[in-house]
Image (tube, rainbow, N blue to C red; front, side, top):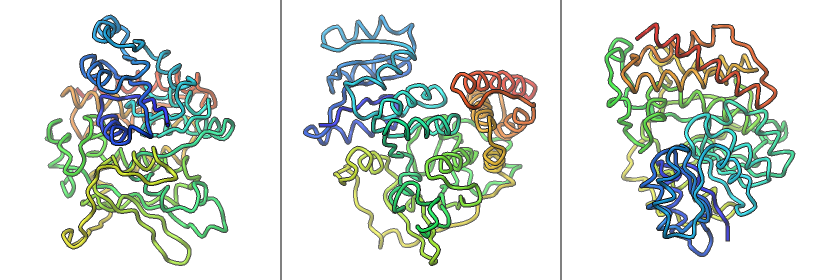
Length: 390
């Protein structure tokens, strides 16, 4: 029986994970459930799954959570310290890191530090603290199973997670697929007037608002490039991006002999989650099989780097190294939030990120405390840059 902490239980990833867990009551127990502010939704999940602990990230909502769980034998807690403690607790052996943004970094590191199986859906933890995370994984015998559909696909197509760096493996490149989001084929001029509602209307995936905007700007793919670097020890020049609008081929691995191995499946996160939960076995995910004849064709095209400059900003940050990916991520979170609040135009998102990267911020990128301080400084600078464009 695997005991699973679902951190981010009320989000789209958390909902998909709990769907898979519910299909296998003999294999999985949801021991911890967490949410950001949605007390009612978290309480409903607790009444269904009967976890041992429930955590609300916002301490101001703790009293409401306790009241909602008064009829359950479930400990109600609040705040980032509770999340970090739950991720490292001996009551769990598997942690789903599905908290959106850099807010999930401490709990992700805690899971790695205590040798858990880490189902990694929080790409920002790898972008911000990739070196620290991989060090904790190696030092403490933790397992990382990537849950992003692209990295999960790469994991499945590699002979081992570190095969890219092994000269004898024959691996030459990683190819990340991107749907292109809702604005694929749009000109820069047309992008100047898009709304948050349009940006959040992803054609293939059911995702939260922040990640939907990241998909629309191609920053989501840029963050995945940085994530692939850390997860698979791939150099920037070994990581390619191709637009694949059907979202059926989730990513590919290229080999020296000319072979390309691809993982195909429905655009449904339950496949990757079932793979991570059940690995090395494959278990039922509740996902319907692909009908290849019905698909008819699969299309691929290069990304439009002129209309969507966030991708190149991510490559630049990766190549610069140090604290640049931390600055990139923080500036992006601020810019996307401002866009969703209608305080910033869509085309100003990459402008804010570029200006923040160029601001000359410096900090200690070798420690968690230094990264947190750099993240805070980058957010302050990005807020100033966003205000200038409001």
